[in-house]
Image 1: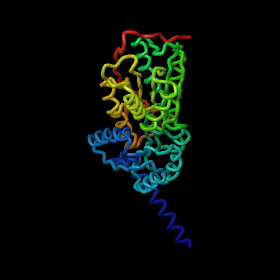
Image 2 (image 1 turned 90 degrees about the vertical axis):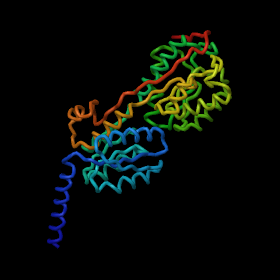
Image 3 (image 1 turned 120 degrees about the horizontal axis):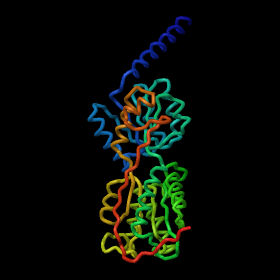
Image 4 (image 1 turned 30 degrees about the vertical axis):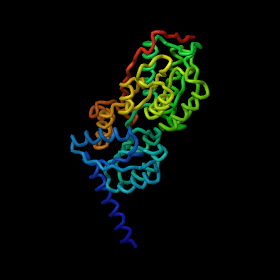
Length: 347
């Protein structure tokens, strides 16, 4: 029995030694996990990641979670023993603790992106980091476009009731990104002292069809003439809104007038939204720099550094509290749809 115990102890020491060797140098392979390959956001990130990895001789293995949390955990657990870095787009941020608990014995580098775990979870493991964008930051950038649009159109109020009548199309309930974006915009409207009438702010779960149905219900309830603006937490829902507006002769891009155009704003900068903006059917969007996201994610995953100042020098982006937040880019195309405009009342 003593011999067996000594053998086990010796084996564990050897395993620990090789574990240290495996993480002592930068890795040239990353296992990347995504919540759903069908997501346009995910596809844009993958395309940028592929391009950056190829240019820096980094091998990528990709796994599609198909929005199934159990499947994603199984995929992650299947490669942990390789001790290779893990780049994880969590289906549910609550899964992060399970991931960290399983990874710790092996010492894998873990970079979460897009969906952020809680700070205590990141702090609990020295090799865990987060790359993404701050929900409030997208709300700030989105509001800047909205504010520019209001100034450009002389703050028109389509039904002359003295308020900006707005429909919010929100992401899933209790989503930090959705809540952060909407809350920030509401706060900025208040700071600018614009009288706001929130017609609705339903959770449309990031989906075009749900947003389409939501907008259809709201317009049937209040009338299109009583909607001044539509603000969506992502481009997919904004696209759903535009598609419904097209069915009632609004936002067609042809001979638009103030009576047949409602400004629609989104987030993500997906190609379809950009094309709608260029064709004057949608108004603006904001999006993260996907090239920067890919670069920072790859560096954080492959480098064996934990000092935040050193990582900042490596990535050229500020690493703070084990996180890197990439700034948003704004894209919009304003058109004067009518010579006649109506002012919005201010406090």
